[in-house]
Image (cartoon, rainbow, N blue to C red; front, side, top):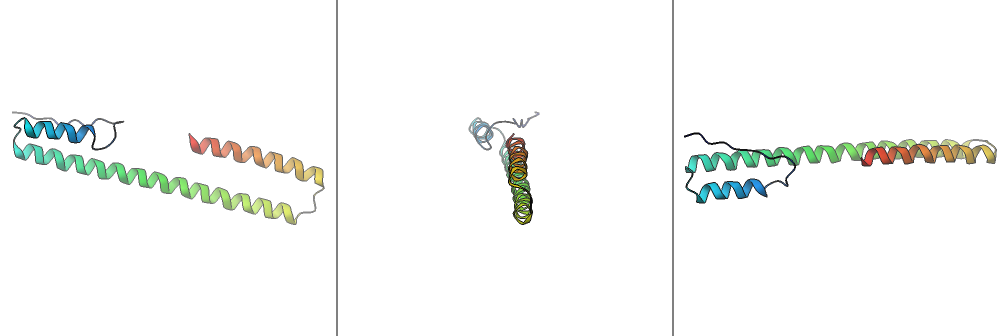
Length: 107
């Protein structure tokens, strides 16, 4: 007899997968198959968690670089001798750049 383990993407980890494994267990599937399905489910859940953690670390690194970059630009502006009108234009342009940057990072 052939058994299949189907992994469905886009569904919260352990919700559908655990339910399916539980149904297989109470339906009389061989224990070795149920155990293998639990192992596969655990491995996939761990991999999903690691991908999510890596994604969050990448986002934090981008945010940190953006903050450092902005701080540097603002400090350089503070130390500059630009006329007030030029400072206003520069700040307006800078605000536009960072609004665009934050929208891209949110998508």
